[in-house]
Amino acid sequence: MNTSRLLIATLTISLFAFNVSADLNTGNINSGVSAYKSVNSNTPKYKVGHLGLKTVIKPLVSMSRALSSKLLAPQNTAFVLGDIYTYPNPAKLTQPTFHVETGIADAVNIKVFNIAGEKVYDTDLGGQPLLNNNKYSYEHKLDKTLASGVYICYVKTSKSGEGDLTRTFKFAIIR
Image 1: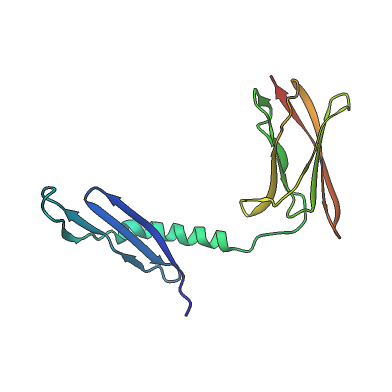
Image 2 (image 1 turned 45 degrees about the vertical axis):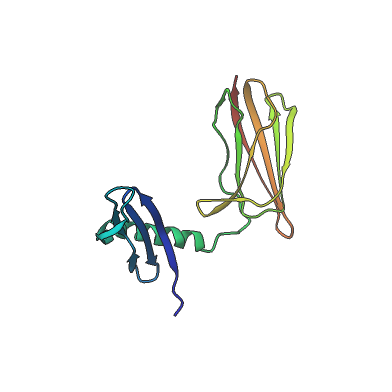
């Protein structure tokens, strides 16, 4: 039987040394939580006793189990458009960040136009996407200073054998 073990914590605070591990399959907690006391710097430390912290640690095991199942869960790599936006919107005295959920794409292109239809920004995103909330997304902070105003963003994502997916949206910048 393959057993997954997770070291929850190793912590030393003044007189206490905590070393707690848990079996993620069964939820059994193996704690090496002990207290040590020293009368002064010349006397050796001695073991005071085992602390019964299983009731305190139990919620950590549940949280660790839930976290590990999310981290180890198969991710959705489908090439579909999800949420696409900038944040903050409006961007006040800061540069906006583009967020594009599209699965794993071969290419992601972002074009920004002013309200007159003139292209003011164009970039291609490469590399591996980030994994946020079990969804693959690309993020890019605008690296060009644009004037205050409303802008139109055109996003095109491509994947070989899948075609192109596009979306257009507006965002604002306030200087």
